[in-house]
Length: 271
Length: 254
Ligand SMILES: Nc1ncnc2c1ncn2[C@@H]1O[C@H](COP(=O)(O)OP(=O)(O)OP(=O)(O)O)[C@@H](O)[C@H]1O
Ligand SMILES: [Mg+2]
Image (tube, rainbow over all chains, first blue to last red; front, side, top):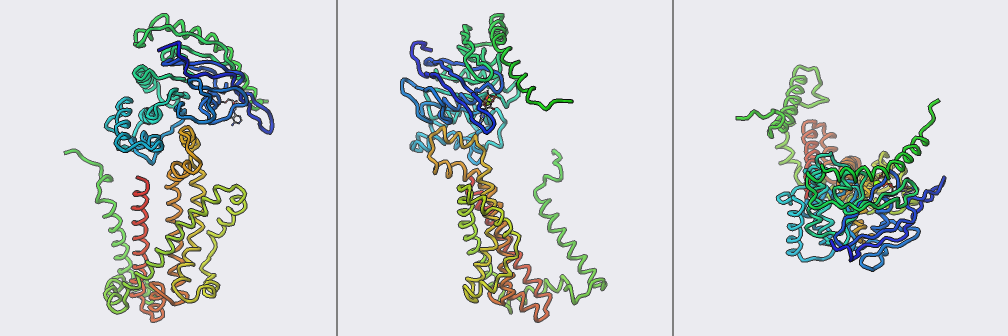
């Protein structure tokens, strides 16, 4: 990681949703930067605006204010410099594993030979060699998410954006896949922005953790994770790891309980 | 040897299906011979079987089969292309869709074949009339299922496409359309069924063309056994189309 070279700069993002009944400010003046090869985790209570922020940074949703720049170039909509991995199941069921990964390469007009080589490389990287000709329906949820990750990486984005990529998986798969992603990230020195709601996941995978407040989503604090890599089982079991988790939970607790109260207030009164 | 559950054996479903038909035919044979059923209403299955040779040699059933199959093919192509195109149009235009969707659904249930005099006036007493009636009656399910399929594409798949900077037309052809194909094929297959029924029906009504006319003639001669044999050829047309559409779907999807 080279902390001096800033790759992603997010500045003053504001996003409001105007509905017939009310105006919800989902993201409120959020700014941060991510350095070359760094993993920044964003954590926040459910409904705080994480996915909204993800969509604005990826260019899928237009922010009301603020700007996103990659290597100094201001983004205006979806851009090959930013690769996105979504929270929901997002493989194309009508394409084989190999053709899923080849999708962005076909669009870019890569020659068939080079396409096959790249697909092979990235499938090997995510540990899916031998599954090229399977269809997504024949794979487990964790394998499908790996296909989605390989598809995004195959396009060689400068910044990898992931929105709770493990949320739909069971815990064991989540831990294993977390390891895998970390290993890949190190191998490629991939600049990564990881959105999550798991504190342990954030501490395990990232260099810094950004804690968001409950609606409107603002930056509450940024915690440096000074744990050595690779993050072995030993490190995850260490006292320092526990201290980071406690520190972040401390920041997060008030926000999470705000979110809970808000949700309860919207329930029909029992009387 | 490992014991495999019986239900997994490959030959079993086919055997069971054909066996079921054989048993039903045998029961019918028995019922007619015992005179529980009148043979003037239901012919003996064995007589139907015997009359195959007769309708092949004397009634030229094969060329009639080809005539009906050809009309059905023309109608099917029209239904597929026009139905899917109109479905895509309705899907793309909110106003048009809200204006038309319910009466297209109503049309699906209407006995359009009864409009045959109108078609006769417009197209004349020829194969075109028959194809057009097949086309019009197969159209509604193809349109409706196309709209349904295209609207059912999961948002996240479109988001993936947008994140790769796809243009609107690429989004449609690379993501929306393939994701909708299974549902579209359900509609096309339904449309095909409607088309075939109406094609044979109209051949029967205007006494022109393929199998429907043959069925009509045989009924007028009161040759019930041969008539049922001719109906078997209608079923054969529909089986051929089903197999072809399944093959086409598999080829398109892979
Ligand atoms: N298209 C929209 N229209 C109106 N309101 C929206 C829209 N999208 C999101 N919101 C609102 O914005 C807020 C933030 O939503 P968002 O999906 O970004 O939260 P999140 O942090 O990703 O939640 P989760 O952890 O459950 O995924 C929510 O209150 C949500 O109701
Ligand atoms: Mg979310």
